[in-house]
Every structure is written in C-alpha cells, then in structure tokens.
Length: 342
Image (cartoon, rainbow, N blue to C red; front, side):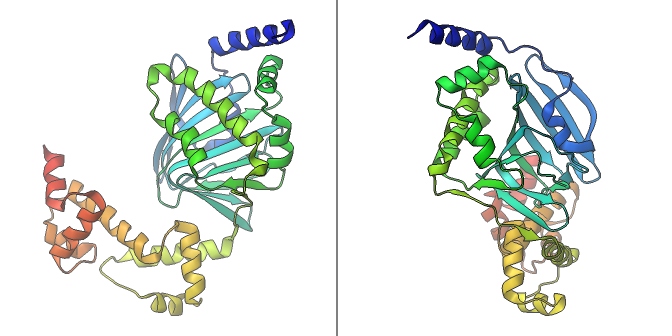
C-alpha cells in the first residue's frame, strides 16, 4: 500500500472511531416538515424526536453517520406527516420500508408507494407535498446525504471502496424522478441487520452498513430490479380512499365489488387496481385486516363480549370471527383478552 493510501486510510479510521457531536440543525429534519412536535432527547450518540398530530404519534431516532450523512429510524403511528415539506439542493434521500406502507405525494398530480422491503432513492429537490401512511403505521430507515457537507476524508475512503457518489447522484437521483428497487435478498441483507443490531454496537455498525449500501447503489445500474415507480393520479387515489372510508363506516355492512363499482361510478377493474395500488392488497383482504384491528381495539378497551364484538365488526357467527382473528394474531379473541389482563 502506498504512503498516500495509508494516510487516507489512517484519516478514515480516525473518522470512523470519532463519532463527534450531533449537529444542532439536522439536514433530514427539514424533510419532515412541521410535523415534528414535542420535546426531543439528546442521547450519547443519537437524538430522539417525538412526532404528534391529530392522527397519532411517532418517534424518529437520528444518528450522525459521518458529517453530512444522517440515518433515521422511523417508528410512525400516524396517518400522515411531512406537510409543507421544503426542497433541498445536493441532498440524496434514501428510504427503506420495513413494515407498513408509505405514500409519497408529489404535488397535485401523482404519488407513488413503498411497501415492506422496498427501497427508494431520490433527490430532495423533488418536492413532496406531504407523506401519507395508508395503513396508519410505518417502520423504516431514512438516510440523508448532504453532498456539500461530506468531508474530503470521507470521500477518499469511499473512493478506496469503489463507491461512486457521482453515479448515485447523477444517474439514480435525477432531479425529477425517483428510483425504486423492490424487495429482494440483497436489500434485505443490508437492512435486516440494521433493525436488529445491539444498541451498544449500533453507532459503529451503522457506519459500516451505510458504506455497504452506497457500494450496492454504485452498481445499481446493472440490476434489472431498478425501476421508475408507478405513479397514481391523485383523483384516483382520492376516490380509492373514499371507498375505503365508505366500507369501514359501518362494519356490519357487506358490499360486493360490483356494488362498490356501481356506487362510485368506476369499473370493477379500475377499482381493484386502484385499491391494490394505494393499500397494497385487495379490497377484501384489507377490509378483513381492518375488521381484525378494530376487534383487537374493542377487546382491549371495552367489556363487550366476544359475540358482541364479532357482530360489531361484521361477523354474525362468533366462531367464524374467532377463526378469522386467530388466523391473523395466532390466538383466539378470548386468549388475547386474557393475556392482556395478566
């Protein structure tokens, strides 16, 4: 190894071993808009933000990987956030969906979706009017790279590892497009360990995994999995959500696809395609899960009998309700209630 490379490696090791303090102003914070409310807690190597609005709450845990690179753990139980989100120059935004579903709305005309296991890479120059979580929960990781703040030593170690930031910025993160890589073993390998690493190892481990991710992205052009996302018209999305609100307004009612098609004035094919696009599943499957989630809440918060809860969520036969509940939660409604009371 040449003297120059040894010095670069030595500088890089110094950077890897010295986390430094979190900056007062986090690059990624602006990407969450004004939905960040409440006190934040500064820990030894991360900062924790509490999110709150009328639809629920959430938590974002921020680690500074290197100067100019931040990693966010998103634990969201909200219907939306990121209102009035600003654009930002020379910032790469990477999102990985672990659990849930993420709707990213771009202005008035289009939005796209991430489902469990998917990865998105884009420029923060693409303005998002807000972000929505159709399933009211979302768990994932966001990585924010501010290219202007990267130290020369960090760029040098990336070059030694054959990480091509220029390719990632110019070819993948085009200003007016978003790249999505659907769930595959390579992405799962990189991110699965980030969700389960021990806390005392996390700060250092994050550095290694982010470099691994950037190396993976540097070779993304050779992968068939890279694709432009499928965008959905906002009017179609709005109508789909109106249908979802209608069928959940009274869970004792049961509607066929044909009845819904006639009521909302669209074809059955368009209805099914739109529903799958927004919610990631069929109307019946989504509604079944919604019934079970409602039943779970009633079991927790009320003294209603299992038979009464079964009726409220649309099951006239309590045995069929118990079977459906067990298929989702792996225990019966009675067992679920009893376990909570223990």
